[in-house]
Image 1 (cartoon, rainbow, N blue to C red):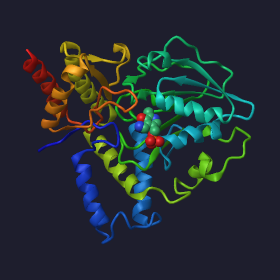
Image 2 (image 1 turned 120 degrees about the vertical axis):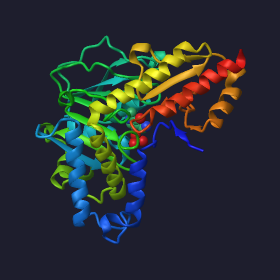
Image 3 (image 1 turned 60 degrees about the vertical axis):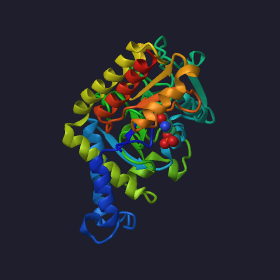
Length: 358
Ligand code: PMP
């Protein structure tokens, strides 16, 4: 049976990426060697790294604009730490927007370094909306936000402009929609949603901002070191980067971020229309802030209908729609590689539940 994978990450990737990865595990580039055994210094892998760094910038429309792309390890969580190390000056201040668990984790790491201002938060409302009524202080070293809140199903639609560097965790919506990416000074994203398998993080940095903290930075945490070593300061996640490259190539072939954006919009519209129409369900995020990647919703009457709904979606081959363990309910993650047919299957199951209960 076909499985419809709505998992929040690691998640579905394009079928052709799975096939090409499988081929490379057996014989990479006709070298007779597996992608799992080749040296990261081999000519073939150096070419993979170069193309992946280049293509990431190309798809974000940042090529030739003073940015560097790195493929690092430690997950997006490591960047929560690397960001203040590289950008928060001694005796400086940073401003953060608190929109969910991951934003909060980033704040905790920054607090260990210096003055960290939380300039707005929706924590009191269980992170069900994106705060908008705030201004970014002009005397901070940077402003940090999270573009898409994977757990709560909210997404920033408008990014405020300011005179301070803008740093954004785009882990769960990178390459999913068009934005003026040149507004951002640092963009980072764990690969395991729209870019590839777990094990690698894309970090895109406007190079001119580096080297200004007068802080001693350990090499492994120092973006300048990673740039100087062309993202090979230490052994990179070879196979994860290769699969990420295949996914980026797939996206380019499809027409890039603009092309996938309209597909993602169609998927989100289809599901949210059903959540709003069907009297058995309700969405949990403020309508204007709803994420096109992660739709969070509840059964109006969990006790009465959960067992039946769960049995129906499982029978339809749906996987991975339980909400995050910290919030419960349901969460349908509709990343780039999820076909609209899978969303239609979920919508049909929601309609079927309604019919059965009539
Ligand atoms: N930021 C966001 C928005 C996320 O969704 C996640 C993980 N799902 C993280 C950060 C943490 O990423 P990692 O597990 O790669 O450290």
